[in-house]
Image (tube, rainbow, N blue to C red; front, side, top):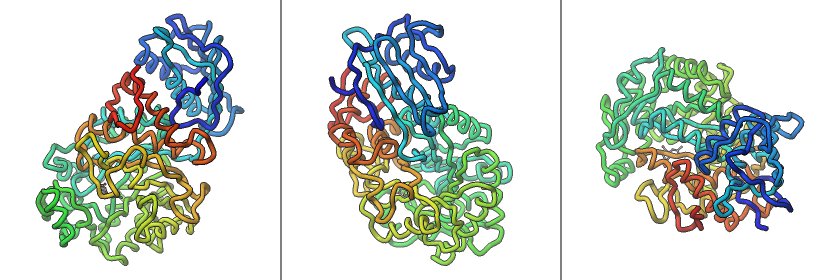
Length: 504
Ligand code: TNX
């Protein structure tokens, strides 16, 4: 019998010898209430069946701290019962996610095949990033993305909250930011921002799906919007020939002081590095953010500061990372910040170069590990979800060796990207979704699915070569089997012709 399809591939899965467990309107679910609710809602969507909350021939959901490492779980299913055991609440939640993928049709009936699974994540950090600055995405869309990501065992939502085009988080210490710099998005589309209560709602919704929120305030570049609220903190835009070329290709005007920027050029803005008022601003912003962010990480950006001198960049990164560390948080920065000699040594680096590094980007990344810290891997030519597909949706950019097929999103191994970096140096994997061309929830679904599943597998599953399931052929078949589940959950995935989609 062939193995059931689970994505991301579990550490171990064996088909049982006997008959499957048969689901019906009589099937009971016992044990942990939160996990039972999570299971019932997906099962209802997928099968129309309602699980009974009582004792009986049943699905049992339980937490047993002796069952394994953090976030791990086991499933034992046979004709008589289905038992999901999490080592902790997150593990049980992930067991439930796997269980929803096991549900299959047998004629007009619904079954869970006899199976034994023992599963645990390879990396502690498995992230998705959503850029809500280039296009603002409302609370409901963010919650939907949390649900989608959690179903693939992601445990971090990185929110790119600020950029040249807009500031998307209301702050009491600096109310001018959202008053003056949140009204528009790329292309002149409407802007928006989250109130503090909405941000807290995102954090708690994510926590209920065992995800942390990693808020990013991108600095010292990507800060044109800051200048709309506080002209005294921002340098005038610096527009060079390369930017004029981008502007020529993509349209939109040149950035101008005091005017909202609605184009997609990068690298023209900088905070004033030599001015103490800048660091008062940084301290206010991260201080207020730290107080409403229970997760350990605050992301300070640090990418593409093309109009800040190297010396100024280094001194800014040193001070901004120290401000975050002094708040008791772990700074995260894009890999360029690895060039800053005085960076707080706890800073996590986020690598966004290619699977085969170019231009010394790997040196920048290695600097974080040399400091005794770790890396998050986001190789742009594999798991940048905003890259165009080879065919299908007319959305996305292509600068990262694009277009990016599902096969390319899948076919890379985290420990092989940066020479000298091994599993212990890797905090995890994150798939960013930049939104220059991404305006709606439907756009997000199309670009993320199915490629985000490839990132999930890189972050959760055994290394390439350590499991028979870790091949493109296996992955494409397993992802194809999830199509009907995704459809029942309202996920408008791109029906890529690389994947053999199941039809029911
Ligand atoms: C590069 S990757 C950026 C973003 C853009 C993205 C578009 C990185 C850290 N910065 O500012 O949105 O490319 O793909």
